[in-house]
Length: 184
Image (tube, helix red, strand yellow):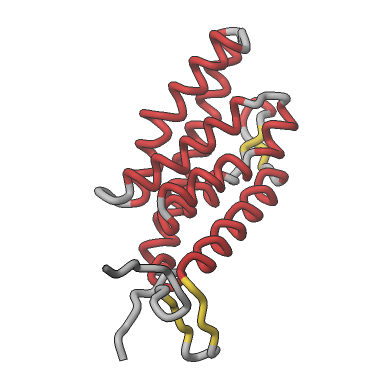
């Protein structure tokens, strides 16, 4: 009878031969998720003027990239933690769940389609209905205000999905962050 116990000898590792650093896959995953979360927090503090005095944010880029590159769990964690600043600013805890769902489902959808479509579908099918239902029925946001929020967020998410797609397809970030192990 044999028991397979994880040890230093059979843990998947990723080595960057140019730098000479070897990391386990789990530690690389944790580091990547932490970096994407930090990027999301920083980007949520920045905004760009938009029409009618509204401001748009691009922190969804980090959430979508975490889902595209790190997978659904990375997207979920990045969305939940990365949305803390925006949730506190707006006094709306449902933002945390909505951003976590965006990252989770972008990570799930990207397995079958391009990153831009995965991000847009995660917004249209999951996050937008979540925001509409919680905003309308839990927070009692007036209809006109809810429509304005959804239009602004649609613009944000479409732009962020395009940026995430360009970064992944042009720079092949997933292959750089999580290279396939090679046998030597």
